[in-house]
Image (tube, rainbow, N blue to C red):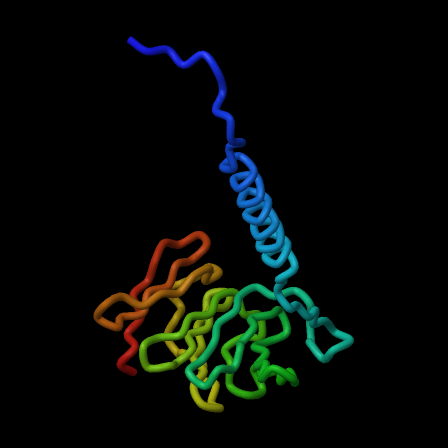
Length: 165
């Protein structure tokens, strides 16, 4: 068995190279993390001063054309990215208080109210006539894989809507 009793006569270069390499890696990692932290989301606040008819929003949906629709206590608000347009019972809604909103596969917006339903497609609002069985605030609307429209009420269960009419 042979035992080495002394250090090699030439200096070992690998610790210095590793230190330099580690410094470079730490430098790169620091700037990558700093760059990630510097990237933020652009945000803009919209309120009554910017044209929003009411600041309390109950529901939101987007149609196939890219418009955002906001359900408020004053009606349905269409936002095109710059201007707000208020749609109310004068335009054909069943009620101005919008509690739920859902877009079906055909691009039609279904709107829930206090015991009532409306639809909005294109530029036409329409109140659904026979919704007397709901008798409670509509809190959610969904479509199933067959395209059937379902409404959940606050106090009276769920309802299947005959959307063929």
